[in-house]
Image 1 (cartoon, rainbow, N blue to C red):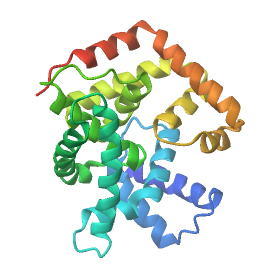
Image 2 (tube, rainbow, N blue to C red):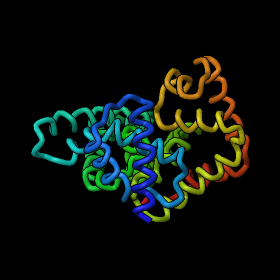
Image 3 (cartoon, rainbow, N blue to C red):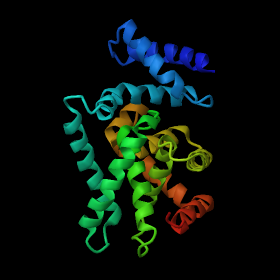
Length: 250
């Protein structure tokens, strides 16, 4: 099975290297294939694998730095991560008393979890999306025993659900995230609208999404808004959000 994944990587990486003008040497392309093949799901479509390769190309150097304390840029890279996590957590705990102190407390737990979980990052989402997913999960566990938090937006909760499959937290969480993605695919039957929503959930800007799909920024914004409205109206999505809100903390 891994040989099949390796062959698929060889073909797609060669195509992307030419299309995106990455200028990878043959040796670098082999290194990409060797690193990615064990991470590829047997069910991954060519589109999903293409995104995975792009995310690997974008983030593998940064991930390597974060995973090796001996690297000269290790401390600087983690400071950037910590600053981003604080922004994510401050939004999550907005409305609580001493929100800043709470965010700082949770951030320490998130950092410990990230250093354990980083080897499980499979490049199925942007690195920031994956970091946000881990931070949201740990925050939810901290807040589970406190007063009910302010309601998260649909966008934030679905983005978390789409990202969680890449965190490797537990088989049940991965299965739930896969089911959510399948449900979103069933609801957003317009392929380009679905792609736009997925890219938005992964952190791409309107300009980047529009460039990939061939839409203007204004039309991209309209289509993503329509996608969110469709999801908000769907009873199964509302039920999923209700279950998330009702889940007890650890």
